[in-house]
Length: 217
View 1 (cartoon, rainbow, N blue to C red):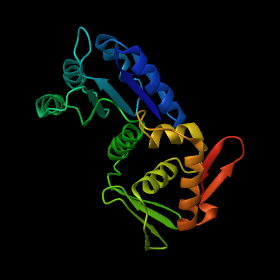
View 2: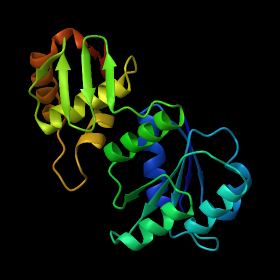
View 3: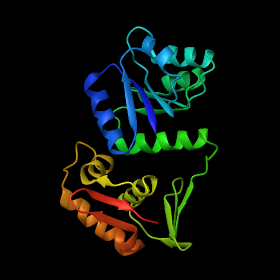
């Protein structure tokens, strides 16, 4: 999946590009809204646009893209939690928003949701073999029977199902599940994986030696 990130803060942009790459996404980065006008039509699945760009603002960029007939889903990044900027962005033509500081898990989930919606798959229920998850209710089912999961177990399962068949490194899982302010430990991931395996079956979470884990339906 190709993503275009328009963000002027270099450190944040580099971190987002790296984190999205760990989730199997190819992310192109531009720092100026003006540069994105012509580049945005180049086959991207989702555009991620910071509101506070220098020169042409993110809101102005969204308006200009929609005026040119570019229908690619747009996710706006905002540093403000107030409703005014969000409403302005949505009215300009954005499809969704996320408030900084950005958590990789939420960003990836919102990108996938926008891509599914654009492809005509807006349902929140995702089925992979014997397992089904509902991202709206936070419910998981195995052979159509509910599986009681903690919030973090559900988020791990959601991450694995979204990337079914793809190996996720331990570091990418840590980045997705744990905020930077929280202590991070690879041993905690092993414990979490062990708990999830006991609930859904060991065969669904495969260890890729030396790399990480992948979901097998």
